[in-house]
Length: 404
Ligand code: KIV
Ligand code: ZN
Image (tube, rainbow, N blue to C red; front, top):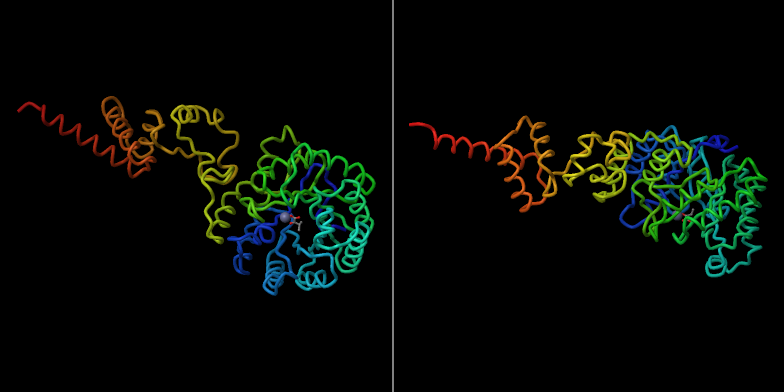
């Protein structure tokens, strides 16, 4: 039996690989303490499965899987494993403290992997996959199989492998786009075919999608696979992962939620924690989140253009498709700069305790535009300085014209 309920056809299982595929990318490596801190945050976020590492990769990785899966409660914990007995045993040792565990076995199935990596025939690859899953099932109730480089594998052979490992006891059949090569239309067609060929004959299994972002299509491809029947998404916070990264968790979850009219599917993620987890990852890996990053970048809900600011102040729905609070921001943030209008400047001044009208507002707005041309963004301190300067200019001006 898989440790996550796979029977609800309207629910997408969120498998987080920030601590494995994400962590194995240059610049994102994490020690045990960092993984622990992140795993607590991911558990609070509500992900279903945490892939905590690749136990056989190094003693450090085995230790991290052991500590994290032993200390954090909530999600199912998982270790990656090659299709070999020694890897499977290492993962079993590392996960022995937690009953809610999954083994994730991968084996390359594409012609290039079969020839260049293994020098094996297709039949030999299929046999190794089945043997590994059968052996794993003697110690794990929940086994996932990944056909590495599935997208470049012949579809009929891919279906043969997935069907054979399903019969051997794998409940989750993962179809990775290992090299980020697919397109939404292509992956949709493939998942549609696999669903009809494999899943419909093995109703206790589900298809999973795992997309890389080499061509910038990881999120689009993941959503296309979901639309064609995938019920598990493999994702990472901030989209970190090998090369250009993995599919970003926050983007897929918010797309499913915001476009429920298109998908009609739910996840267990508490979206109000997305920004917090994103910031934590940025802190532990010392890597800033790009300002324009979808969902969690600081510009994601910031409006600078005057016309946009005016619209959002009148009704946020003019330029916002999600509420900032829904992903964990305090509120819409207005970046004041040279494109901002008088309305936004007066509104911010009012929040700062200055209700500007008439000539004073005109003077502040003129000073604001001059300063914005010089330095770009105008923060609260700058705005207050402009207001003070305009106010004292007006006082002096009045004083100069006061009757003697
Ligand atoms: O990209 C990939 O193929 C992987 C597998 C190990 C699932 O990360
Ligand atoms: Zn991957």
